[in-house]
Amino acid sequence: VYSLHGLGKSTLMNTLFKSKVSRKSVQATSQEKIPKTIHIKSVSHDIEEKGVRMKLTVIDTPGFGDQINNENCWQPIMKFINAQYEQYLQEEININRKKRIPDSRVHCCIYFIPPTGHCLRPLDVEFMRRLSKVVNIVPVIAKADTLTLEERDFFKQKIREELRANGIDVYPQKEFDEDAEDRMINDKIREMIPFAVVGSDQEYQVNGRRLLGRKTKWGTIEVENIAHCEFAYLRDLLIRLNIYVSSIHYEVYRVRRLNENNTAVAHANGLPQHHMTSHEM
Image (cartoon, rainbow, N blue to C red; front, side):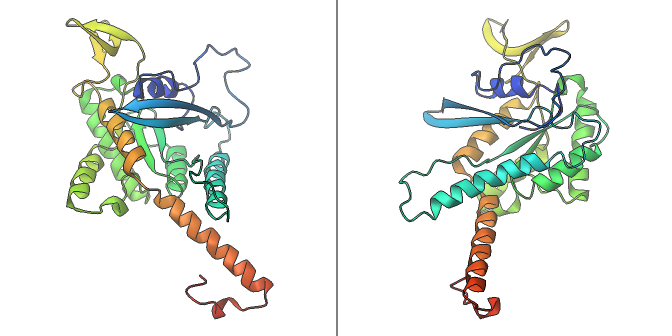
């Protein structure tokens, strides 16, 4: 989960699975407000969704984008993602590998975009362009209730145009269109990206029912009401992604690393690389 300070990451993560899965937000002191470097914090939680038990790990990155100079601020995050791939690969190629390999691979990056209503910032473009090559990116507009419906629709369209113009391939990529049904579902998701979301872990009484929402002087914004925000669509997408989607990025990483290893072995044996058979590659 990546975004600038104060866009409601922790609240949205808690809302997503109706559990306190993210680190508890506390009032920071003036010295603590902006971490000097990017930290990577993981919290794991067992959840049950529609009868399916899953282990959810939320990875937060306090400090991302908070510096005056944000050059290369994505590097620790890319390094972390690749380290999880490497750990899984080493377990996978182990002669005596475990029956069930512990899987700490990052399946998805939810990228929070500030609700400016105008366009993506250079930091957003550069981060998503780089990270989309190693992980599934799901962009969301944070605190979307600060925009009118017209502003929201304009902003969403503008973001989609900028993603295309910058060659940023967000989830779901074309590789996931395995059949006509998948393509139909994925096309609907593509039309909605980025999801405009509102997070809240507070419940309110609305028409005799207890609902997650945000209370304003104009009424209650119901988090799971699709007429109010697209939180429910995001939640369904993440459940689907966690259960059904294989990691195309891991496969790319795996092939590259195995090729590197084979090349290194060939050089060590004095065998020119072009003499290697396709089976060896």
